[in-house]
Image (tube, rainbow, N blue to C red; front, side, top):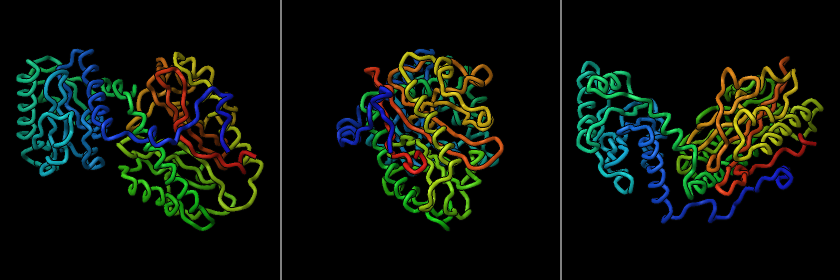
Length: 416
């Protein structure tokens, strides 16, 4: 069962191959366009260069993919991206050949791994050599400069650049702003990731039966995404029965019982590095759902349906929060922390929080064409019992229309 998208003014998902898979001719231009967005953000802030360690940022700016999970905790590969001039990828030792075909990279050098894990007592000396090399690149390729953007490195690395006269800024701001607005044909990569993950969730749902453990069912999605060239699942958000409320209880070895709700959030870093992020709640077994289960599901469904219909270009974050579906009082304390959030290679800018939270925890901004966003719902009673998690992923197109990207049916038994 699916929503009446026409009544909501939302375009339906597409499964046409030409919309869901970039061609080999389009991919290089997508990579170059993403790099251009990064450079534009650096220039607008008068930043000479960014040194990127976050593997999602490295992949966005250059298209380079290597040991994504490992690189998220080890500063052992990074990219030097100047506002103008040659891009240098510093690759993990022995892996230099992996990115040699990419049009975004002008030079590949072996990385200096700047952590105690690699260097022990030599960490300071290696970090100093790292900073000297970055300084040399900025002097030779950028004509010098006072501002350098850095993220996910060590504090010692930032201190070393500061000692060389640079003002060190956080690279997250320009990178988040670059990634928030999708370049031409980038959406094809996102749709490709979603189509693959949807099939994985179908296999997961088919495995849900009385007696199976949460982990066993969850593993079906892992196997499928690896088979379809995805990277990894970022969280472990699948749970059952009493573990569905409150939300954010990780997948476990609990055995799912007949008649219980099973809730999940995909959180997959999928094909081409793009996040496939939607949530569903299922009913285990063949029994009819209880009235309470149907009421929970209907509230969550109504929440995302209302909030999807309010997702329009030109609407401010505060306006969106004010227009949002009103959560009944007994369910407010366990509400999901965001009404909606940006999505690209991960959860991204912006985060739009509830009207109750926006003054203390939120910020204002404008929903604009080019953004992809997820609309969230979790409904769980403050006194306990089961809960329902639903979420959809959408695209605010350049023509101002809003398109539903995720395409997975809702549970007809629970909707009644």
